[in-house]
Amino acid sequence: MKKYLVLLATVVMVLALFSSCSQGTGDEDGKKVLRFVFWGDIEEIKIINNIVEKFEAAYPGIKVKAERAPAGNPYMEKIMTQIAGKMAPDVVFVSSDNIPVFAKKGLLNDLNPYVKRDKFPIDSFYEVLVDRFIYCLLYTSPSPRDRTRSRMPSSA
Image (cartoon, rainbow, N blue to C red; front, side, top):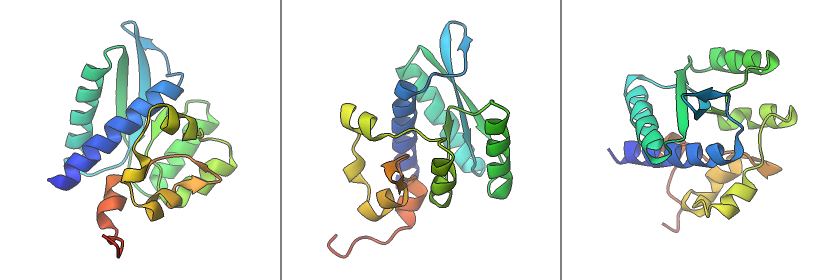
């Protein structure tokens, strides 16, 4: 249960962060639309849908269009094809292994200004995890799944 609460909190924070730095993909009923592409199993889909519902309630001017895609190589192929076709999502799940791929192509926003401005609690994540999502700049927050699978620091 704790894993899912952490997932909920992180996705809400990331959506909020991106809603402040994304242009969105258009309007739907006068609302900014954010396309959010993710991967996950049936339980994670339920969690994401719940998060989106709560996010939209907290930010009534934003409509989140959540789209599940298959994990692994098919996910990267889909995202890269959408980017090449100028149909890139506003928010994506990105594996830490793929941060350099996206960063080298200039496809990610530097989140440091938003972390500072919004006082995003980046220090609540283990430093070793945050480091996995940095490629010269901070591009994303670690997922709760990474956080829960990591060993506690020896000082904890």
